[in-house]
Image (cartoon, rainbow, N blue to C red; front, side):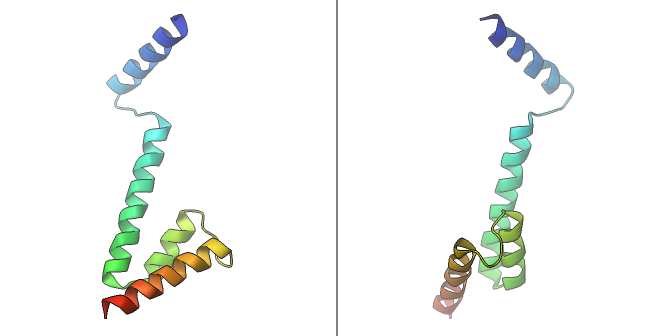
Amino acid sequence: MSDEKDISKVREEEAQRGRRPTHLRERERQQRLRKLVWDSMRNGNKALFQQVLIDLDEKPGTVRYDELMKMYDDYQRAKR
């Protein structure tokens, strides 16, 4: 029980100083990157899409990366 109080106290102190826990920063980063994915798809910006995938730890040459690029190409063809 005291551990929970200690954790709550530290969180309150950090919040008062304007700091957020690291996981919130990572969540915001992920949200920002997802928004860029959708923007790149809507605008047809393949280079941005590729860069965002790399930033999301999808490495070129992997099966997952290739699948995502195929999905991007299919989406762009369907828009026409």
